[in-house]
Length: 333
Image 1 (cartoon, rainbow, N blue to C red):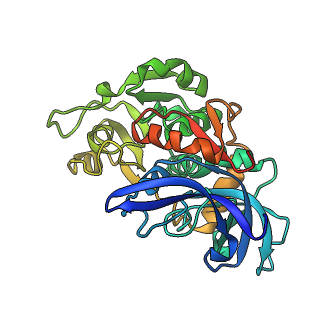
Image 2: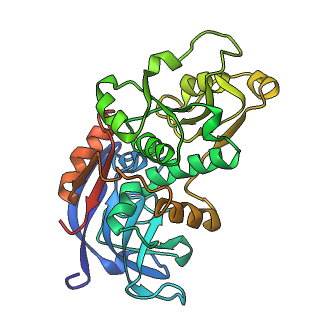
C-alpha cells in the first residue's frame, strides 16, 4: 500500500444501463467500517461477480462499486481478540462484493463475523480455487452425505458439470468414493470431466425431459443441480426412492415445474443451497473438510490465474457461457 492507496477494479455507471470496468487506485479510508482490514492476495471469479461487474441491480444496488464475493489474504488491522494481525484468512459470502467493496481490490474491510481463519493444509491460493463455487459445491455434497446418500446407493448426477460449482462437486464426490455422472452441454470437454473424476458423461439433452410425466424411471441416488429450470425438474422425477437433490443455480431458469409425486411416492428430498448466509459452525466444517478429506488431488487442474487487468475478459466469457473450470485472481500480479 502506497500512501493509503490500493489497486482495485471499479465498476461505474456511464449512462443509465451502460457500465464500465476500469482498474484504478482507490483510498483505503473510503472502505466501509468494519473490524478487520485485510490485504487481499487472491480472489476468484463467480457468475455473481460477473453480474455485479455488469451493473445487475439484483446483485449490487449502487455504483461505483468494486466486485469480488471471495477474498483470501492477510489481516493488517484488527479490532477482534480472535483474529490477529498477520493471520491468513478467507472471506466468502455475506455481503462481500455485492454491496460491500469486494475482493477485486487489494484491501477489504469487513466485520469479524465474516472471517474464517485459513485451515491448516490449505494455501490462500487453494482457498480461492475453491472460493464460493467450491464452497457451494462442498455444501451440496455435505447435504447429500448428511441425508444418508451413500456411495453404494448408486450414481450421483452433477449438472452444469464444466462450471465452477459442478467441476469441484465432481472432484469432491470422486475423492470420497461416489460414482459421478456428469451432465453438460459442452460434450467436447469430455477429457476435462473424466480427469475430474466423472465415470460417465451425458449430454444435457438426455436429462431435459419435456414430457408431462410426473415420474420418470429412477436413475440417481442423488443429484447436485447447478442450473435450475427443467433440468432440475427432470432430476427430481428421475431420482430413486429416498434420494436427495440439491439446487444451487438458475443459469437455465429460475423457474421449474414439478408435482408432489416424487416427494410423496418416492420420498425424495430437495435441498436449497445458500452459501451466502451459511451458519459459521457449518462454514467451518466445510472449510476444514476442503483442507483435508475432501481436498481433491486434482485441485490445480483446469484453473486459470489472471491479474486484475486480465479479469475483464474472463467476466465476458462467463456471461457468454464460454467459461469452464475455475478462474482465480492474483492481486500481486
